[in-house]
Image (tube, rainbow, N blue to C red; front, side, top):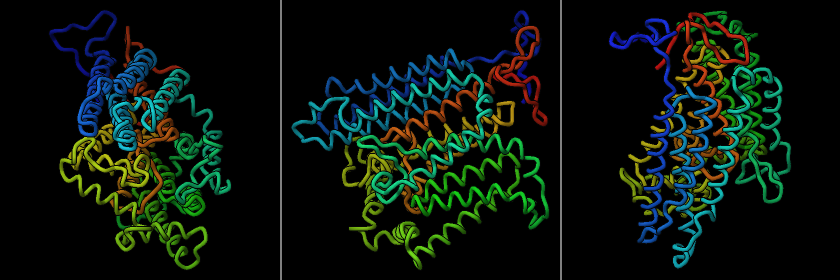
Length: 496
């Protein structure tokens, strides 16, 4: 990307070199988009009440106002601590988070007795808890932005985070089923009424380790031993890291009984390897290893059972959910019927029957919303997710150090893969998984972990978008570590 030229009608400001325009922070654009997103959330709440209650209560705007106050707080933090961060990330995430809170409040209205719905407290039920989790998640994201002034500083703790990530991944597998298992998947740690999903936080810790490791080893992993069908394949001894992560993902699949988490961990590592090496062969090797391992688990589940039985059952339901629509296939069948009932335009906010969907507040929230907003509405939601992923990838392209590129690219891909896994399971594209829909589903673990991911992406985009040349032509870089020059990296990149 070349430096933007100063228009002839606008001479360069004092101390600025001719032909170079300083970057703008675009925080006012972020504020405008954020207020628009919250207006949409308030409108959604009003339409839900009009449909469910046949009237709009005077307090319909309270949840949207509470969310607006929370998101304005993180906006102010970004304005002062990351002034050049991407202006589209926060409004897009806020819109998804707000719609998730609105739909969960809609479930609270449906669960309440008809005569009590109009008096239902705004901060009660699942919707109220999600509001509280949103506040906690945003505070954590703001705290991370305050502590991590330079994204490269976390690379110092890469091996510690990698070890912590592995412990968090495997912890539910070694705990008793009474503490860790919900709906057949061992993904939780429950202590009394408190529960947490450690694997959600393991994503970020492992990605930091992957990015640091691949920055150091990418030259070795890029070496090709032979060429087949026009594709360069790596040396056999360089396959060690992929095989280790493959084995870990299979252990997750077998002992935690969750295909989605297994696919997520293995997929984000292979994608990060591909970003680092630009070798298509790594993607092919990853696909062969994962699908080969999944097929082996299916065969062993049929022949042996034991720890493989759960995956075999999920695969059988996926292949023929209507074979037992009132028992084993009930959840998937109801999700497909909800999506089909919604059609193109949906039944309208508040007009569906989401309580017929098991776990609609978690795993099947996308199907519950889809019944009410239809295919067009779901396409709009997917476009918002696509926007978040695209801005994450743009941050990876803009930042000038290899660690930041790999970390931002891996985080963006992880969000995309998580959406694919849950939407693919609901639509019968892949077997059902226990993954939650980012920013929409109820629950604190997923919400906090994904807001931390957004905080890291904001920090990296701030580093990539801030001006390189300042007054007197001096080169400005983020403090906190030595500058790193990439192959062909420009030394004078100014972004508007």
